[in-house]
Image 1 (cartoon, rainbow, N blue to C red):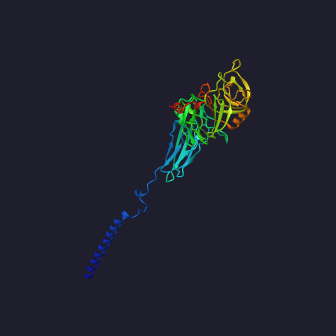
Image 2 (image 1 turned 45 degrees about the vertical axis):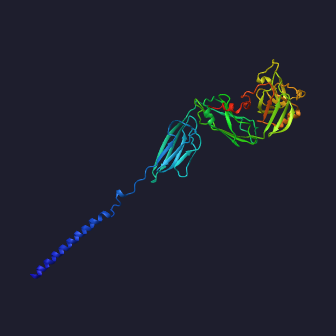
Image 3 (image 1 turned 180 degrees about the horizontal axis):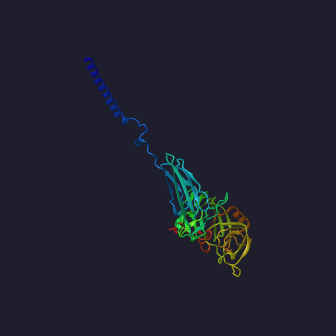
Length: 405
């Protein structure tokens, strides 16, 4: 009996111990389950967030009336650009452009055409490598008409230079109603710097000159940036142009109608004096500054070219030599053997400045385009400002009043 009872007590103790182990085991499992990895991997709540989609922006925005001079700019955010194409819809040609080093910006590098449609397709990728594509179609402005800017004088050839009296300017082939826009679109840079201003001769032509004659050695650069510019009433600039001009040494001739002598100044210093015959009373030489605009070793002078034709007592037609034009009104500095006896004492010409052969040859070899001939003590009127080049007849205050206001 004692043996039996002992066995039962041992059994009870064994049962309690196993149950306790089970409880402890369950407790350990319950405590550790929240801090252990799931058998199926990480939970969704703790996984990395997906990268934001790349965004693409295109300017100008799609639509009508884009300025062809305004660059197309494509930018990316939350990613980088992977491809950009801008295509002329009618021609199928692509517009050139460049991608920035960080691949965040693409910018077109050539002007667009007027009245054209362009299709823009741009792609960008985000950090996950996912692609976003953006498309846009823009239409450029269609001008009522286009104005071509002829430069005054024409852009020179290599080595060509001009005198200190040279007038510069632009002559459009269409009327310009917004003169301020035209002036703003043209940049004139002089080295060394000198004050200058515009004067509009008419609705198409504007001249540019300094306050006084240009300094010898001046380099003048004119940038005509009128493409894409509304010059008024829907007239847009047809093209941009640029030219660089160099001013040579100062050559100024001073012809005096009282003494019938012409003094020559080179860089302000007198170097020569020569007898002349100026215009007679019925055909006087214009008073004031003249600028040489053309030169010919031989030329046929016909007064009918400026309205004095056969039947008029002042009509003439003759072949002359060593001739340099100083106005479009038929005035030249030239050789005239027939007036040698009057040169130095009497004014007998039709308005020209007559010289003998030796002096005319010297003058022709030393005076060039843009050089100045000033005429004093004659009865002729001032040159009209439009008569190549009567611009220097105006003082500075008057000249400035002729610009866009």
